[in-house]
Image 1 (cartoon, rainbow, N blue to C red):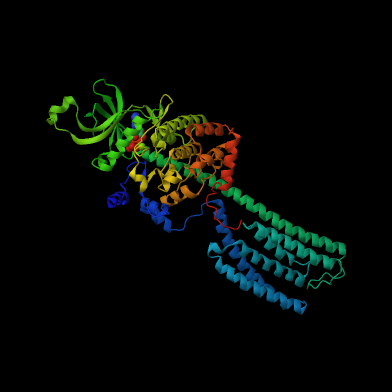
Image 2 (spheres, helix red, strand yellow; image 1 turned 90 degrees about the vertical axis):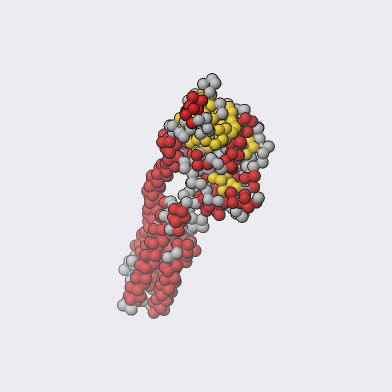
Length: 595
Ligand SMILES: Nc1ncnc2c1ncn2[C@@H]1O[C@H](COP(=O)(O)OP(=O)(O)O)[C@@H](O)[C@H]1O
Ligand SMILES: [Mg+2]
């Protein structure tokens, strides 16, 4: 029996013909996420994972460029050192000082050669390495100041060093090199200017120049230090701003890709809507018409009751799934859930069962009364007129605040009604939310719902839900409670307000990992939204069910308030604590990078 279950769970997934990718995954050992998700990963994603990823953000791109620049700077340092060593033989400088200077340069070249090779691997580019190089620069720079003269061009070599380091992401090292250059140079210049020591430099500042002139010269050099530091920081800020603009464009592209995913699913179904395999046939008390829509498992037909002509919608299994015994459980669950829940925001179930699909009474003679197809499960529902949320989001990537608040209120009420009946939907997503033409939202498709009275054996070994809207506990294959549906509603609100999925990755392993361990990008960074909406998302998408909203009504109230920027104080405090504990993800920031 266990082996049956295993075979069923880990067998090849049927390719899902629509964009509605409901995951029903085998659960591996703990941690189950990676192997689980690998089972789902398309081969293309696996191939892409082997290639080095492109820089994810502006900061990444700048870092790559910076490492290349640092290595160039080191090579320039070698050239400068060799030239400087050459000059020692032609200038008139104290012998001891010349020896120390040459030793310093040789030491610097040897150490920097090591770093030059190590930086070929970006992981080795650390703040500590930069700090060591900066110390060598400062020491050798000031040996040069002593050797050539405090009022010669030697200090300008230090300027180049300050400018270089201040442009890097290592802000602390930049501050350090600036401060230590100022202190060292001031000390040397003050000692010479005051006459405490004789200027040992080759281009010594002996008698002809007055002390005031020397002091002014020293101030001038200090000013260049500051200028180098300041302009470099400004350059860096300017580059970041420029790349940030670029990133906004990229974000638009990724919004489009989220739309495309939903678009493709809808398009497929739209193209297939129209006459279906069973159009004009009869199942139970219903005559079937055109196909209204297709999901991952079912085909929904427009229908009418034979006796009264009353409109209905009938869901049958997709042809390729007929005969799969596991699918019958789906219909049984849908029927049980539909009958147990009493809510104007859940599609009403009229009838269901198990029936033969056969020609309409008038056509019976044509086929000699034999059934046209073997008996199969069906569900008859109220016929809805309108569009799924997925269709609406395809037309406009975002919902207005008002429309989103209404969605939250009504779908929240549906979740509460289901919870009262002991039912968890487990697969709330834009394709399963229906906006009726009269403005009512209805939740569809309780096919993978968890019914309390009927513990689902799949809970023990699988993951159920659609990855983008799945709660962390579902991603881990744990039993879900209504707070998993509230998480999905939070993820849908995030999607409707920002135009993006909270978590998105080509590789399902990465997606599921993020779902369990990471926070999404800050919503107000993706669209013009009040900070309270960020807070709403922090609570709605909290990793632990205990930290989320307790009911659909509570979530809906917070959503409406957050969209107006008027979240209550308690929820604000609660959200701020959650955000402090687990900050919004900064996409692409390398952990441990020297910032
Ligand atoms: N009662 C209904 N009235 C009108 N259209 C419906 C109805 N139920 C479902 N649909 C359409 O059929 C699609 C698939 O239905 P769904 O119940 O989600 O099937 P599946 O179980 O295969 O996901 C929906 O996205 C929707 O477009
Ligand atoms: Mg569906």
